Amino acid sequence: MYDYGRGVPQNDKTAVRWYTLAAEQGFAEAQNDLGAMYHYGKGVDQNHNTAVKWYTLAAEQGFVGAQYNLSIQYALGQGVTENYVKAHMWANIARYNGYENTKKLMEHLVASMTQEQIAKSQDLAQECVDKDYKGC
Image 1 (tube, helix red, strand yellow):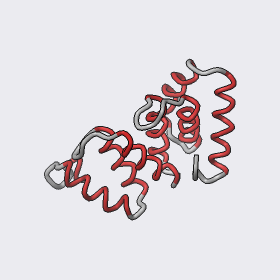
Image 2 (tube, helix red, strand yellow):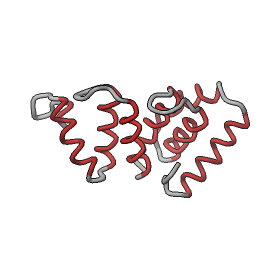
Image 3 (cartoon, helix red, strand yellow):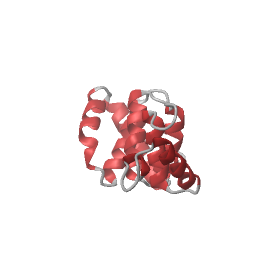
Image 4 (cartoon, one colour):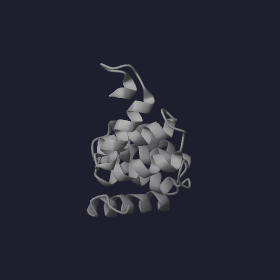
């Protein structure tokens, strides 16, 4: 992994180049990592819209890290309109798929949501799982 400098000199631009090649071939982990590079502006200009694009592609393939990252984007309104229902939906899906670091995020979201919003989020999460994460 070039962005961490394991076995090679650390070079964010080189990491972006390799992540892009792999992401464009549909590799979910590379799509998630490329999303993170755009999210943090490592090796590229920071661009939350592009981060969301790559996170979404990986999340739709069931990549749990991207599902969690997408929930954060919705919670913060970065690259998408702030939407706690969607944020909770993606966090709930990530938790369902075994991502253990969702507790604090979900607690934060629930504290700002109505019971109706929470119920809607849970319904959307189930629909999303039923659709194999496509078009959520």
